[in-house]
Image 1: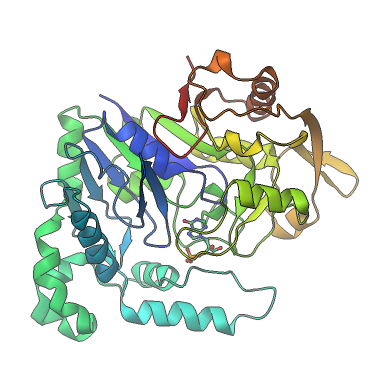
Image 2: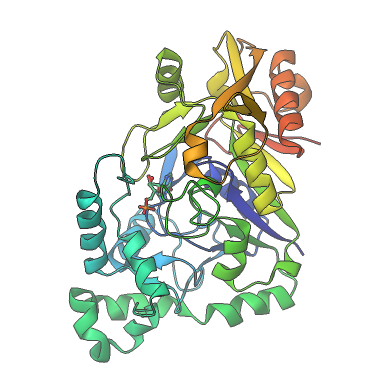
Length: 401
Ligand code: IMP
């Protein structure tokens, strides 16, 4: 039995969907533990591309049970349309393999309205660049103890005033409900293999990210425990998914951002456009200060590198190992955003390998310079790399022995 957590180590979009799908085959349970349909997890199987926003990325394996945990905020309309879209493509999605926590909070139409209004009313420089999906206001109501949980659909008449037009969805959505805390912990008692799937990333965490330019939940490993109901002593591994470079959507500081032709090249090569909003992602070099911070706050045990192939054509690559702040070198991420804004990256130059990596199956067959980049990255972060992804497909993956 193993209970593993998948977390993003940067600002989201690290490729957690592909990695969850890759590992899901051997899992009994895949549990999404926070966020909502602000996430966009892309899974590519052969020529088929699946973009999942709410349903866990284990859904393509009919034997794997997917759970939307208590920590998630659920837009019922999006959920039903995602279920139907998958079913229309021949994917099994039934109450037997998709289960929704009746304790998860509902994103109500009023939350989406508030999200948009708040974003519009924020002054320039203070805009967050939210996805507009109602995520923040739904979590505000949860913490304020004025939210509505999915269980409201079990008593639609009593809750029709707040549910509004959503009331009509009750009979379609209720069959998926479970008491997720009991269900998940029964699986723990039965020593099942469980994967806890995070959305967004450490730097978007409301406690550990670049506040206030963050999302309203805890994508970090602690959030996996509260958002699923499994206590920390049961966790075996925390897999940190890290892109071979860095991206960010929305506003907020980003020390290694490239506003030049190289940034544009990363955007084009890496197809760095938001899965949920289509916005172009900001791109930059790998930042080991950020990933070390993620290693620390998540207790990451393994690194999973994604999108290595995006760097294949570069003559040389930069790797940020520390920052310069007021003339001094610092190796940790400052907690104060004003200080972070003043940080300048200190780079190590690494020669590019100028060769395709996508179809390489074994670590030893990677170009020597690619291995050298990975070694430097591993050393700068201080955690071993166990999986390397060199393309969107399942087969485009190297397991490091
Ligand atoms: P919200 O989660 O919609 O409130 O947006 C807050 C911030 O998190 C914005 O900068 C979004 O662009 C960012 N964000 C939210 N979800 C994701 C994601 O799945 N990937 C990357 N960025 C995200």
